[in-house]
Length: 146
Image (cartoon, rainbow, N blue to C red; front, top):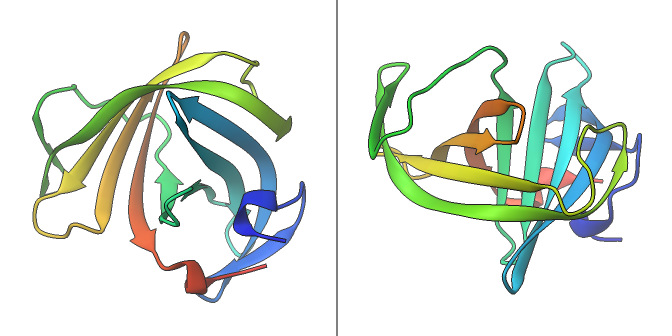
């Protein structure tokens, strides 16, 4: 089994903290794709996304409910400066678990990188009926145990 094949309700360990997989969404953009798992940290029930890219890059995002950020080239958030890193449109190719996405639904994403730490990201996803903001950090695949 690989990180691209985690199962519903499976427990995983990331940097010594236990999480439970709640759902998975596979996104496609042109010829590439990535997997996004919604996971819950068991010690405090905080919600996260674990993004696994085919390029073997992993980012752990903490979901920031009720956070509104104006889209621009440079953003100041929690005393840090971020600049636009990548932007695109992902299409839902498949999913499992309790999720509010549908097949072929599209999301426009904006990925910002921290100017002082290139392993920290601010993500804004615009869906047809909501906008989600999350703060992420790149982690090593070896920090994930399943």
